[in-house]
Image 1 (spheres, rainbow over the protein chains, first blue to last red):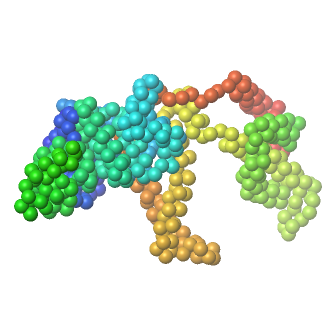
Image 2 (cartoon, rainbow over the protein chains, first blue to last red; image 1 turned 45 degrees about the vertical axis):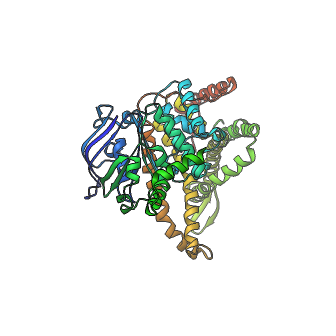
Length: 272
Length: 228
């Protein structure tokens, strides 16, 4: 379990507090979606939940982050990395810059953990298979498209087999097929007990993936609840977050006097 | 006779060039080495020939006398410089830097040092590529980078800031991404593969090490002559 309690955070050298009294809990195997307008504090929350802020980038933090019951304060960055990993939105900066092939790039994390070669190779192959990257293993990581680089970046994190995964816009550069692939891989990862926090603008992805949605605005949690409940909440649009197609269609039908249950029935019929 | 001209020329002729021919890089090696040596060679020739005191004056140029001793000194310095540049060039042309650094790590070099060495080597082409992208973006917005030297210099200035700033930002994000992957963890890593190391390479390395010891000893004992 990853838990933030009463967390406020301010970047080093800045007077403004970016996060205010944030409470957030990720249970084992749970996938939580994080939504909010630009500059709401999503990326900062990702950094704080991963422990990198302030452990690596400095800044001032009040409140507590606990990882499986252990306070994160005082843990070094490599100790944090053994528990929680975070993926950033720019895939070009996710590359190590020292690997000659995609295979070596994905294997870098397990290697750094000091694992035996056989274990490193097994984890790397598993991550490659999850994201269907077999055709890229011998490619130069610097010569990938944005979408491919994003998939390799996510695979590099999965190969660490962390207990908690935090992803900041993991599908920003992916096409619909790549987005679905990432969704399937993350769902499979959650089934192994890993908890996930995913900051995303693609609410359709989150709608089918997450059990809970947290909406953040101005560094404060504005909405927090079951996925359908938050996405159907009319306050979401006021935050600048576009609800998923299902919620928008449901609202449109409701405005014409058609019950959402009819839509659900139609979906079931079309699935048959 | 080992020093002076004969020693460096023997090293070039009997060790470096044959190795370069076997590796198929002789032409490139000579070109690169000449280019590397040329700027220093010009200053060495000018300084040595015209300022070295000597009794045999070849010709005079204003207040400066070109002496035979100066020409001899410049010649000996140049062959030594060429021996150094060809040996470094041969290493660069025949050794894949990544394999070299990883093999050093396998032999005990710190992973951090290995990363710094590799990242530095990788940073240059990445920076050149980024500069190209930024230049294209600036040109699309009307920046003129063609024409006279002055116009080109004026065009380069607006590129310097974005290239440096974006490189710095990327360094920060990349260091975070590496920390996420436990790069800071102390202790040895089990590398995925070994760089092939044949018996011949082992013998050559041992011979080179022995030659180094002999060179140092002869130099210290005065057997190996220094420059005149």
